[in-house]
Amino acid sequence: MWTCIKANAHAREALGAVLVAVFALAALIGVKLQVDATSQLQKEQAAREIYSEFLALSVRQPALAAGGYCDRRDATQIIAYENYVEYLL
Image 1 (cartoon, rainbow, N blue to C red):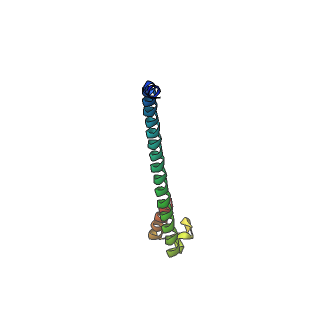
Image 2: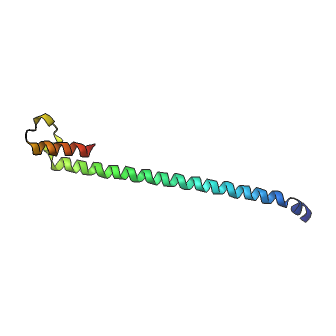
Image 3: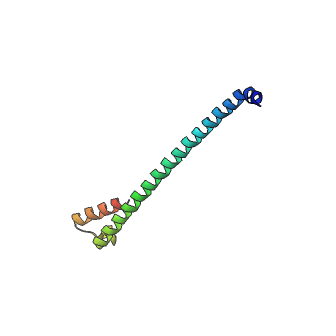
């Protein structure tokens, strides 16, 4: 029995090294996927927060939310509306 184990020791060591390399590569790929998913979630959360702030601004300033760029006569109203639209974009 020991002679069989000793005779195949190099093959088992090589197989072990290959398996370690495969598992290490799988772990690196898993980490990369997890980092990408976390980054995407952070971007989505930031977008939700910005949109929530935009909706709050629309409620506080219903005149801006009504639209009508051509109806605005005062330069202050035009600038406020332009900034409102830029914030939306």
